[in-house]
Amino acid sequence: MTALRPERESTSYGQQPYEDSGALGDAQAQTRYLPAYDDTAPYEPPADDETVALRRAEPPGDPVPARRAPSGPAAAPGGRAARRRAAKGRHGRRRKGAAPEPAVESEGGEPRAPLSRVEARRLAKARKPGPGVIASRVIGEVFITTGVLMLLFVTYQLWWTNVRAHAQAGNEASQLQDDWASGRRNPGAFEPGQGFALLHIPELDVVVPIAEGISSKKVLDRGMVGHYAEGALKTAMPSARTGNFGLAGHRNTHGEPFRYINRLQPGDPIIVETQDTYYVYKTASMLPVTPPSNVSVLDPVPKGSGFTAPGRYITLTTCTPEFTSKYRLIVWGKMVEERPRSKGKPDALVR
Image (cartoon, rainbow, N blue to C red; front, top):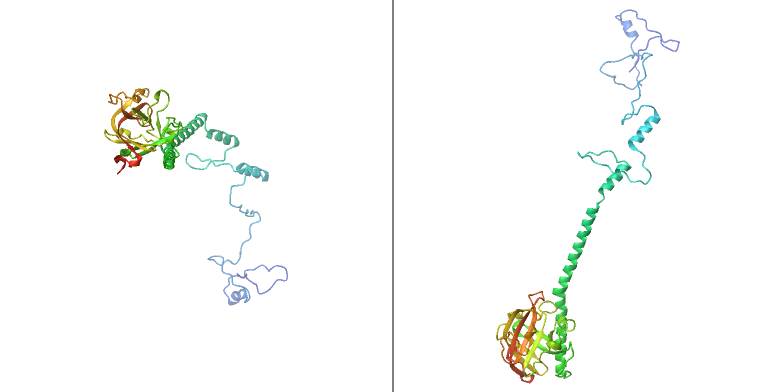
């Protein structure tokens, strides 16, 4: 806005003081002190609703308004050094490369101040598992490991031993038949573990090699059936005119050839095939449970079989109950036919 300009300029540095000549009623007075119009001066709007021409100077004693401090925490009293100490107390100095201290939450979820070193160590020590926890973990790991080992052992016993024994017995049967066809194996005495015949139980769909002896490692665990041929348990061969042909086999695992002999009924055929003859027996009787020490079941006239006179018999022995070896299960049969291989298979094998 523009200032009032008098008609007469002062020759000094300032303007002459305005002298009131009375009321500004006459035209001369009214036009004498009109503001001069400046075409080049930019337009400035009034400061507020009222047109302010003059502004009274501030009294000499009034203080200069203080510069407003920047927003943030209030400055600490006591000067710059005090403010630095206060800032260090609030934020602290973090060493180069040191991890930030964890913020600890209060019960209400609000973050609290960082922990001191002593408190952090104490908290870390409290979080470490005690001896009881460590012991329970060790015991749990031992139980888990034991369980896994037992599961693997059961799988080995119930599945893998059968797979391996079936393969070994099948190979032995094929080799035995090849030897018969080529004439390389003659009837007579056989070495322990040597296969010399095939056992057929049609009702149970069993065809398994018969080997000399009842050794677990050489005979039974390889899926074959063993002939009692040693010491006091020696029994007759099928070709003998009288006697008891005794056989042993696994009921469970390792091929389990005798697993279901408890299902045999009187009259069911049991055939022994040798290089030149088929010996056909008929199931006669069964002893469901007897102690392993009852070797009388292998006598020439076996006790408990119902036979009363010498004859040509067969005895099958295996363990019972299943998956145990506490007792023995016995099945007896009586020979009803001796058929040369040159005449073909017996009727029990022709189906």
